[in-house]
Image (tube, rainbow, N blue to C red; front, top):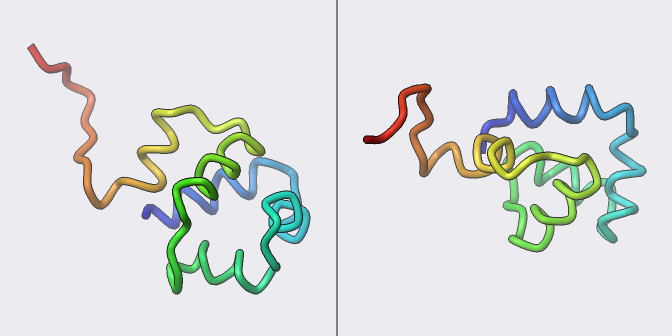
Length: 77
């Protein structure tokens, strides 16, 4: 997970972390552990988070799956 990019989206969202956690039906301490990489987001939590913050599929992948996918600006031919 790219915590720097996640933090950027959180900061730019204008929402408080406590509000996001409540909307996701998880406690703030649990949410904080997830964004700090102490515990992992479930697939449904990732979906809910992205829906709340209106994060695109591409940005979702850059945030949550950056450890598994290499991103670059060149296209595959």
